[in-house]
Each structure stands twice: as C-alpha cells, then as structure tokens.
Image 1 (tube, helix red, strand yellow):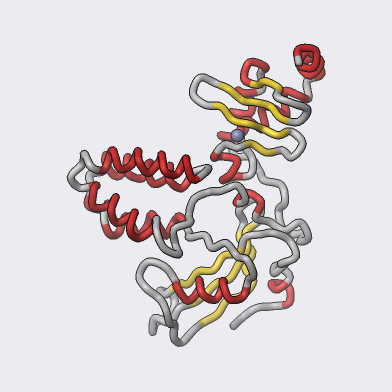
Image 2 (tube, helix red, strand yellow; image 1 turned 135 degrees about the vertical axis):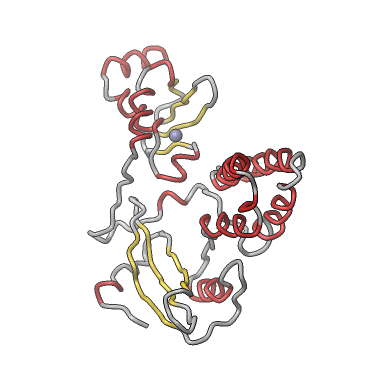
Length: 260
Ligand SMILES: [Zn+2]
C-alpha cells in the first residue's frame, strides 16, 4: 500500500461524503490489480487517499468488484454503496450495444443516461418503462434491456442513479477540497434565461416553484436546493442560478411579497 500523511488528510469521515474505490488490471504485467481509494469534491475533482497493489484478489467477477464492496461495507458504518455509472454503460456497451447501428447506439445511451439521472424511485420506474417500451420494439435491444435488468437493477450493484444526497459529497474541512459546486456553461446559460419572473412563483418564505412549458421543480432559497436532476448530479442548476439572480433584483422581491 502506498500513501502519505498528506493524502491521508483526505480521509475525513467526520463529515458526510463520498469515497471511491476502483481497481485497474491493465497497469501491471502479471495482471495484479492496482486499487485506488479516493474522494471527490464539489467540482468533481478526485483526491486520492491510497494506492494498493494486490497480488491476489478474491470475490471478483466481470461486472463489479465484490471484494471492494465487501471491504467498504466492513469498514464504514451505514455506508451506501453506489455503482459507477461509467462501469454500467461500459459493460452494456461491451456485451450488447457495440454491435448496434450508430443511430440506435445514441438512442440507447440516452435511455441509460435517463436511468442514471433518475431523481426518485418513481422516476426510475418510469424511465425503465420508457426504455422497455422502446427496447421490445427493436430486435437488437431487447437483449440489452433484460441484461440491464438482471445485472444492474437487482442485487448489490443496483444503485448507480443520482439521488438526493449525491450532490453533497465533499468535505468542508479540507482547504484543498472545493466546497462550492461550479456551474458549467449550460447551467450558466439557463441561469440567464430563467432569471425572469414568469418562470417562478413563490410558495412560502423559502420555497419557490419553477415552471416552464415542459417541467416544474421546487426550489429552496435558504438551503439553495432544487429537486431537478441537474442539481442532484452537479449540486447546482440553471433554475437555482436563475432564481438567485431574480431575487437579487429588489423590484421583483417587493412585487412578489405584495402578491403573496
Ligand atoms: Zn434545478
């Protein structure tokens, strides 16, 4: 095992956070796995904690690393294990959709992405029904649908969807950890577009409802949260940026108070 005192300071279990564990089998000639244990911050930057070379590994299979799973469950109390979305897609690709025509690959990737971006159990069920409805009409895709269901939607590696707690996976103790999510260009663009009154309605002291022709979300100004999938994934979204811009305009706040 290789680590340093400085790397070990990334191991801050006093605060809620997300750790990552993964193995690479392609770096060492004799195929021994190199294990990496790390954390990510609010900017999705990775902070390694330790690297280990193992001469043997038990409990592995081709889909996911059972040994890593068991180690994490043993060492961390009340831990939620999340499967890496990249691994899910990469396995689906290898086993199934590499042979699909490009047009279908794109559609299937979109369905997988929608499943990953599920904001709740109900939303997840709906996204799966949508995929099933598509897959059963396409000869090549039904195999993938059943593979996905069997391998990635039951059992210990079934959680790879964004959820309520995912966006907060950083520590506030470490100076080198980014603690404020940085909006990407898309979020900034939509923040600009949404910063007008017609999109927002005040519900109570802290909550606002966002509404456009296709979607509606609930935002909390005090906790700076939104219940859209972009917020769950990135910790920031166009709706939140838009609302913050809007309430910083005095005129709107006064008007909204009078109305409510
Ligand atoms: Zn949002």
